[in-house]
Length: 252
Image 1 (cartoon, rainbow, N blue to C red):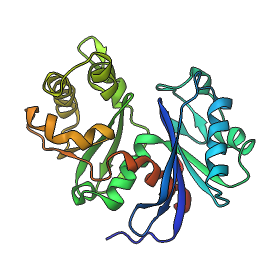
Image 2: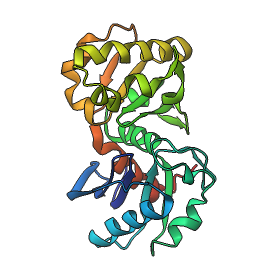
Image 3: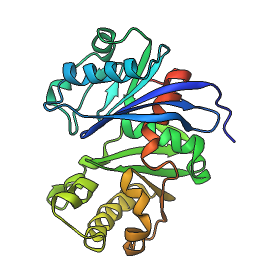
Image 4: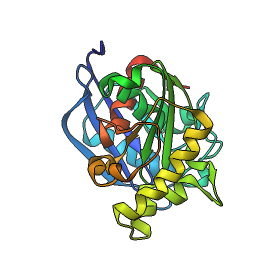
């Protein structure tokens, strides 16, 4: 049972959309509808921060905000740029978002945020032992947990499997880009998970992102030994984790 209380606000920046919502931290549910705005192209820091400020303004939120990036974020600095403009690399997030927001904020990796939400509100298995949480979307995000404690800023989507990065082979975007049916795409994911299984030996994989809603269509085609389960928060998790992070001061 989670002990989180109060309301908070999270914004999840992705390669295709930027989403924000108020969150009731008692149960991890949205308060009112989520607002989604397409990620600007090019997704430069200025353009993205402008959309973040627009979401905060349109939702009339005047308290601290949690923000996720599909990037390694350490000591307020962006060190990678997965599926967003490379101009993000080296950006000081405190300096950037302070120019656009009149509220306090924290910035963290998107998969880390989603994993934190799953630990707090989702599958109880995430709280015990070694678990790898993955988000399948524009890329593959990852979060490592040991007894519910996060090891931040892992980037398993960029691990080379065969001759390509894992997310080039088995992300949800790869499925859509190549027009693959679930039964055609699942063996690709299985191959990636086999590599992760061999290297890290988790007790389970928890899979989030929008495609987790269709787990019944692709899950049965996986053949790896490690249990694979859909994350309970599905694609809500990034926003919820961001909202948690800002209230609890969680920032790498």
